[in-house]
Length: 77
Image 1 (cartoon, rainbow, N blue to C red):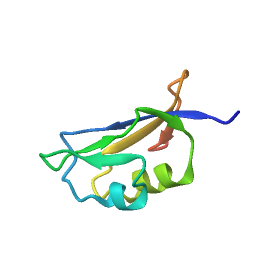
Image 2: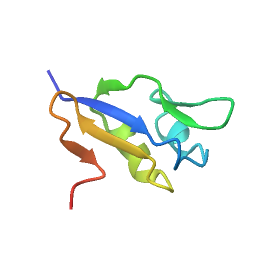
Image 3: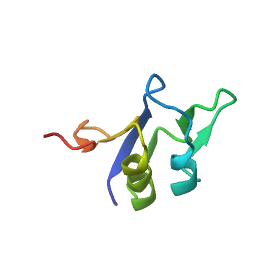
Image 4: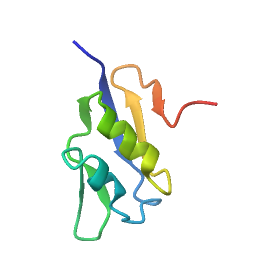
């Protein structure tokens, strides 16, 4: 069994660019206010979700390991 991730979008940062919905359409959606939301806050670890977080122009998406909270993205410096 693979890792599980907890995915969050900081609505104060999100500008509704929709990059996440293009890079990971099954993992993110925009609401009527053009704000991104994960379709499921807990998800299997996967490259599309990571690409979406990395591709967010304002770094509004954060990913942590479920259970431990260890950051996946953005990485700790």
